[in-house]
Image (cartoon, rainbow, N blue to C red; front, side, top):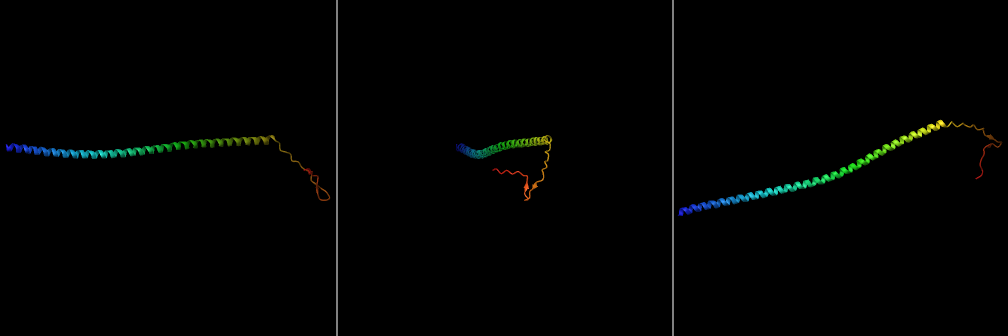
Length: 135
């Protein structure tokens, strides 16, 4: 019977060795799976960080775009105001020109009055000029 027990013992040792190999392989597989999981978590965190930064950048760009729109609207209003002022100046110039033309046409030229030459007395003084002395 010693032969059966030695065969049986050999099988048992082989099975035990095989179980240990399977256990070691399972440990290696578990460690490798944990490493992959940690790597994937790190990648996910990195991607989330980049997404967060991209969202913040998008908010900043949106704010800048809104400010640019406001500035563009103000510039358009300023341009419209400048055009309106220019048109008003042209209209005013035309009105002034028309009024000046009508005044030239309506008013006859004022006659030039010739005055008599001054009279000088014996003392060499100019006479004939009225001077207001009441003051």
